[in-house]
Every structure is written in structure tokens, then in C-alpha cells.
Image (cartoon, rainbow, N blue to C red; front, side):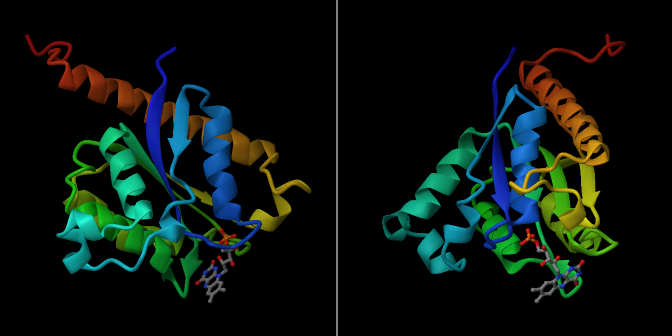
Length: 193
Ligand SMILES: Cc1cc2nc3c(=O)[nH]c(=O)nc-3n(C[C@H](O)[C@H](O)[C@H](O)COP(=O)(O)O)c2cc1C
């Protein structure tokens, strides 16, 4: 099985975060995926182009995040919805990737979880133009509503509907990652001559 490194961005700093649990679920249902860096987004400083422009001023968290982004084949974002928009932590992490070119062609899953009925889905739309601009390839969006009722005592998703939905999303991600591999290997598309 091909092991693939995927950059994780968790937009929540909350202990017991339902969004952090979504990233863990990706690893659980996708044994061929290594999701790394999920906790880094919350340790990044507020984005500052002056600091970004001078690598000597990068704190360790930025080095680690940019290094992972450069090596990762894909991206998985799990973001809370705050006041009908994405968490600032999520957007801040993405801002740290703008200058890296690291998202071009990267298959991406966008996810949210919330105790509410909408599952945080209103956090997605504002991020889509940004991800598109950066060249990320959005393969699926996962929304988990009433998240508190879907986790077990350890805070892990055991609800069969959530686990099955994630299996589908991860299968899409893995297919897109393997397509991206073949494309970068210069193989022609079926039927393209
Ligand atoms: C200031 C604040 C604003 C929030 N706004 C929304 C919202 O607009 N829509 C929503 O579904 N949930 C909202 N919530 C609830 C969060 O979705 C909920 O706290 C969720 O569990 C956060 O994600 P986490 O579990 O990963 O920390 C808000 C929570 C806070 C603290």
C-alpha cells in the first residue's frame, strides 16, 4: 500500500474539539494516509508578511508547518464555524501557505463539525475561493451536525453514518492523490492517445 503524507489543519484550539476528532477519523479510516501537522495551525503566530519574507525570523512552528506542506501530497482541513464564518485559526494557517505555492494541485478535503444542525457548513464557502486561488483541488466537503451526540466518551466518532461518510470522502481523496501521482509521473489519460 502506498503511504501518503497529508497536511492536516485543525482550526480549533478547544480541548475535546469535534474538528480535531475529524482529523483523527481520517487517519482511522484511511490507513494509507498519514495526517500530520493537525496541531500546528494553533501554534502558528498571526500571519505577518514581514516575518514570512525573512526565513531567519520564522518560529519553529512556521518552519515545521511549511516543511510539512512542501512534503505533503494533499490537504485535510477541519474547521469550526464561528459567527457563520471559518475560525481565524484556519484562515491564518492558510495565509502561511500562500507564499509557498505548496497547495498547487493538492487534493483537498474540507470538513467541519458543530453541535448545531448545520454542522459548521457556513465555514466552507468563504474558504473555497482562497483554496481555488492557491491551486488546491477540492475533492469533497464533509459536514458533521449534532457532533456532540456522535462521539463516544473518548471524543472519537463511532456513529456509523459519520464513519461511513468519512470512508467515502477518504476514498475520494485517495483516488485524487493517486491520479495526481500518475499525472505528475507524465502518464497520459485513458483515451487521450
Ligand atoms: C464564539 C462562537 C461562535 C460560534 N458560532 C457558531 C456558528 O456560527 N455556527 C455554528 O454552527 N456553531 C457556532 N459555534 C459553535 C461551534 O461550532 C462549536 O463550539 C464547535 O464545537 C467548535 O468546534 P470544535 O468542537 O472543533 O472546537 C460557535 C461557538 C463560539 C464559541
